[in-house]
Image (spheres, rainbow, N blue to C red):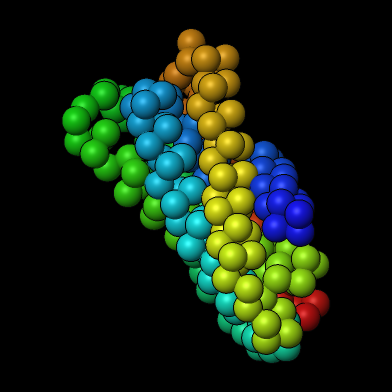
Amino acid sequence: MEEARLFLITYVAAFLGVIPPGLVNMTVAKTCVEHGKKNGMYVAVGASFIVLFQAFVAILLANYIFSNPFVQNILLRAGLVIFAILGIYFFVKAKRKDDIEQHSEKARSNSIFKGMLIAVLNVFPIPYFVAIAGALNVGVGGSYDWFKILSFAVAGAMGTFTSLYLYVLFFNKIESKTETFSRFSNYFMALLMLVLIVITLFRIYSS
């Protein structure tokens, strides 16, 4: 019963955490626009696979991170650099007027790797899952129940995939405006990176 409660709470938390427009879900939507729904689904699968490991690592590090503010600062500073690089990349890409890429076997084969790469660059799930693990008392205090840890990680990945899957489903509403959305999404993601930079700077200096 306790494991079921843990799974449900973690699933809902992961699901809600990915609903707001962000790096991963906007990448899924952009891939649907540029390469089709099938590749968007592959990106979602790749990203969720990485989230499985991020949630697992977050639990194992929860006790250490909670007792070491210095580690939190290191993670935030690493995220700051990554967000700055991505922000420049998306802004430059939005300014270019290249044609939208057509579907190809290469695009299909690269979609899962693309999802995994984007998820790796997205550093926020780890502190997010660390906070959840602390609230649910999983992996904190030196006690490790491996069944609970596995349930937590799987729930995090499944909740993430469910939310990303909704982005793939609602792709139909933007499919008729492919070129406009593709350019808009690049500007949006550049702006998102700027917001994340500001938030990260605030968190670094407030801590």
